[in-house]
Image 1 (tube, rainbow, N blue to C red):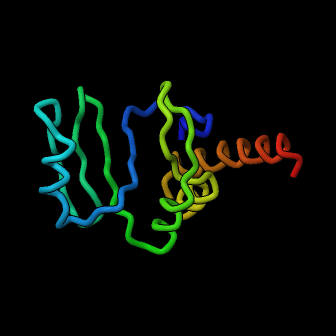
Image 2: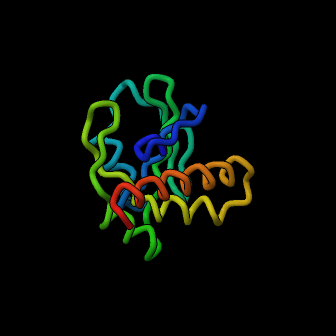
Length: 122
């Protein structure tokens, strides 16, 4: 969410990945060193810690998730150019959630979306 200009007081980092639970051993070998501590693995994803920061890998499986990965634009995050899920996708995931903080996130993301559309003249 910070990549789209909305920062809230959470400390976790969410990553949508094209992987499956069966890919976890290979993922561990490629990405994880001694600085990583895996806490939880399930069919949806895994949570690990990097320098005490929780990182959630969520496995892309649905048509919408796969399209979000395919259409992910590059954004600058902490001085690094990375692909982030499209704003429309992020808003739709927040819209489906019943958690209060996600509803607040949705309102703020819709504000950002309106600002971006105004800048583009849409």
